[in-house]
Length: 271
Image (tube, rainbow, N blue to C red; front, top):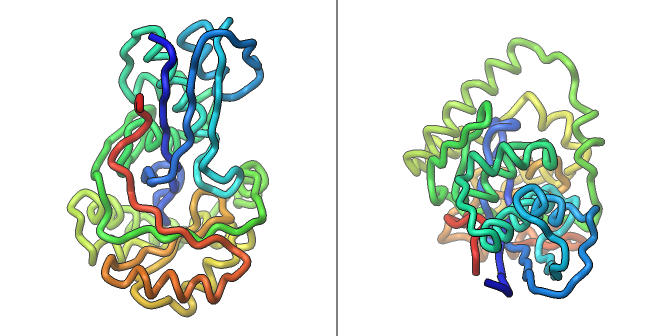
């Protein structure tokens, strides 16, 4: 029954060593209201997603964007999740997160972001599958969001075709720690996981804050990761020291927005 209002979260993908296979939903939202009496733009990403499940003709789509675009926070995955969730609500079709992921991959191309936007919490993805391993993480994500933008294709083009064996070994060990630390909510394992030699060394020029933060961790921080393709950097912080961390980061990165973004256990849903 119309109107329908839906919400979908931002996401932070990779989480360091989980390149293209790990992401967490964040408490930052895009929204969509679908009502009668409109002339939808067939080229809009969210309406294209809706159209994979239902007919958008004659409907009005009102998008509200709370997630900065091209900042590495999964804005496009959120828009796709909005379209799917709205279509399911309008048509009455009930599809699981993995079914929607399969439908959405031709639009998004990055399973990690879309999986977390759909399922919420902390998700691992592989071969079209989703494992939602946790609702929360042991540290709070504090985001440094620059005003500059990064296109995913440009950041991905910076990655080499081959990497040294030592880099693969280093990252595989930390990816194992990441999964274990997230699934068990173990702060020591998660903190030990925050390193990567597969993609972050090559993407650091798109997210220059990451090296600065790692060289001089602010109060309460245990590590930092590039969010998606950048330029946003996530500083993983102890809950009891968030205020001190945020104050220091705002002083050091005055030209960026510093935001406390909790991990959201909810993915896209009807509001």
